[in-house]
Length: 309
Image (cartoon, rainbow, N blue to C red):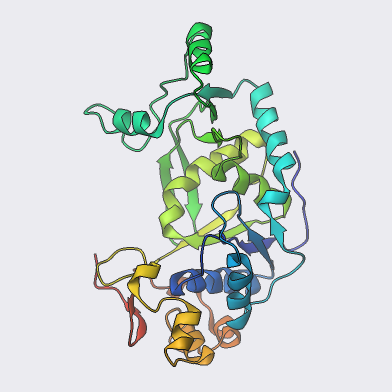
C-alpha cells in the first residue's frame, strides 16, 4: 500500500455524523484548520461514517464549519465509500500472519481486563491461541467473530507537538468488527495515508489510542503523521462537553441570541487572546503558546480556562 504524496502535505478534520457539533468540536476543527493553514498544508474534510449516522447530521456539521469561517481543499471524503481500501489493508495483514479471529463479547473482555491481574485497558489475548476445535465450536454456536491484530509489541512511542514523547499501550486491536465493518483505528490510518495527511490535530482524549495507530502505520509501510492532541472543552463538572450541558451547539447559541461573530470570537480568543476571527488567528498563531489545560463551557462567557485538575 502506498500513500498519496502531494507537495506540502495536509491536515484534516474528520467528524462522525452522529449529531451536531458542539463548541468543543468546533474549537478542535478551528485548531486543525489553523495548524494546517499556517504550515503550508492543504486542509481536508473527511466524514468518519462507519458507526452510527444520524440523518442530516453531516449536512449540519459541514454548514456549521463553513459558518465559523473554515474552508477545505478538494472533495469531501466519506469512509463508507472506501470499504475496499480497508479490506485490502486487512488482507495484507492477514496474509502476513498478523490477524486472528476473536469471539469474545464485550462483557467477557470487560471482565478479563478488570480482573485483579488483568492488563488494564488492554485486550488480554483470550482468542489469540484458540484451537481449531474451539473456533469451530464458537462458529457453530453462532458467535460473530471480530478480526484482531496480532501485535508483537506491548508499547509504542509517538512524538506529539504539545505532549512531546508519549509511550502508550499497544494491544491486539480490532481491525474488523463482528458485524463485518472495518474498525476506526484501521480506517483512520489507511485514510490519512491515502489522502497525504501528514499532520493530525485532534482532541487529547484520543492520545492514548494513537500509539496503536502509529504502530499500524509501521506494519502497513505507511508514514506516521505529525500529531498534535489539543485540550478538550469540559462542562462545569470536568466532564467532556455534551448536548446535555445546555446551549452547546452553534444553532443553540444563535437561538439564544448570540451572533455567529460572537461565537467565532469566543472560539478564537480561547486559542489566542489577540484573535477574533480565523484570519486573525492564523496571523498570530503560535503553537507554543497554546493552552495546555482544558477549557470549561460557561453559558455566559462561552469558554474559559478550566479550574479542573
